[in-house]
Length: 91
Image (tube, rainbow, N blue to C red):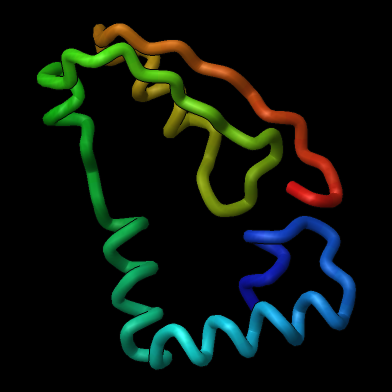
């Protein structure tokens, strides 16, 4: 089900392979917890403490992470670079 997020335009064989991999890697409960942790994590409060130069890459039209997330980094006052990565069939 999530294959289209991680792999744009997957073939049926690719969907099946990724589904098998995901099911072997984590139970449905653990996968749900991981997604919840990803989408529930707010790092805005710690961004000003990051001192290393950082490049934020964001895939164009990424269905998993909105582009506004990259803007948050860029406007946080750190030493950030931001680049959009073209969305292709292979992501």
